[in-house]
Image 1 (cartoon, rainbow, N blue to C red):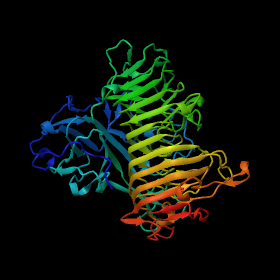
Image 2 (image 1 turned 90 degrees about the vertical axis):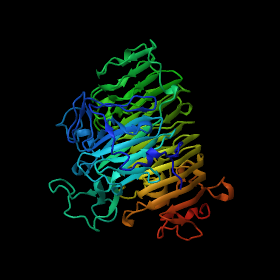
Image 3 (image 1 turned 135 degrees about the horizontal axis):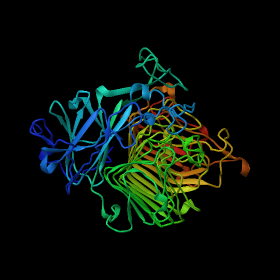
Image 4 (image 1 turned 90 degrees about the horizontal axis):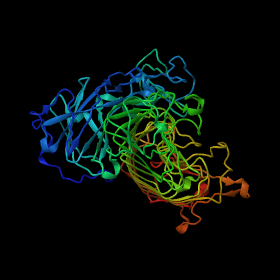
Length: 625
């Protein structure tokens, strides 16, 4: 399988990254950053190292584990600082219901269990480079930085890695599509284990006897369901942005937001809102509702905004660009804007990090930005006719999604999403509309929902392609028939979750393709379908899964159930009724480990390597080749 990441410049001598190369490296002090035509890094002077509680309003949580500097290949001895952010589960707020009230503990399952006990967190840094570059990483714990102790994911990245004994050096060739990768140390990994074999088991930990879910020892009685770094580290490398993503900030039509508490954005007359480098906040009981004049939000590199953004503009083209961060760290889980931003779930009014009431025919472009610690679904828009709006997302990153119900962005008809990173708890790639293209996506999945979702309601959609996807990690507890854990899945009907007779046989999902996928480590099954409509011409091509993990969890099992339409004479949904040869689902070049799964090999069924367990009703309507 090829890599998503194709360098546009060949390695040069300086990128042969040996310890000798860096013996004379010069490190700039006093947090000096790079700001040249080919390399840009940035810093926060109010970084706060704090792994336990919420940080001060004007501060930015800084990694307690990693320090990073970057050099351009044109002067490989000069290393400049790049701020390393850190996200922690629940943002140090505890399991609270009311914003800012540490005593308001509530019994709502946010799907965070042992993560706070084991000290799990996620660090990341971002820089811009229009040349080959070198990343220098120092571990604050003094841990091993020998290349033999390092794994870079996706593992298809063939970066040169070396050490001088104190720091790790990674040579990163220039790419016009950027890079989004994980740097992992083998002595800093956590094996997520279930309490026992079988279904309905939760994670256990052997760190703190006084904490929940403690077991004295890890052995075969507590099966491994995933392996992740305890202190994750992500590196985001982007080319300098094209002019279309950078507004002219000298125009009078630009409002420059003062640092600190953000107010008054609903009263502006300008069309562009500019957050310069600095720290901004809105508190956990409000979010930024933009005036109808504002169509473009620009977060400069080094801008850190604690809040969420809602558009009200009726302009045809809306934008959110820059390389700043929009962080949901002040919000409680499922913050309900109609209930004082308290933890009361509402599919309508729980807060999205990006939202808007926009006009029919409008489109929204998001480029370069990072969304940190979303409290709920990351993005949804409203319009009189959602079938008329589109999303164009590129070089977008979502991190710190430890909460359960943290989806990827919504993709309306004719949307194009590419070169994106998702750390995501719930439905990752949401394919609910026609004519959608996703490519060069990197996923880090936690324990809920599939990577690609096309269910919840009957859908009449076609022309969907999701290709060139790298899955770095998953850690599913177990399989669910109603809400399948899989690469691609269709959940049951949201309004009646126990019925198998609520399909709509007037609707069809067709011309739907997953192509060029790699899933590293322990992975879920290929597909899980509760068919809420007919399906035609679905293709799963060139899919590689490293391993399915413990069979008792059934996570690796693929399913395809039979549904009927009680409103139309109890007709059964069809698979392949309008497909060539009646084959509605074609699985081609599917590998588990190094084994090709196919009908011819006879290794596809639930008791074999492929673990496919489709209802016999579909025999003759699908193939594996």
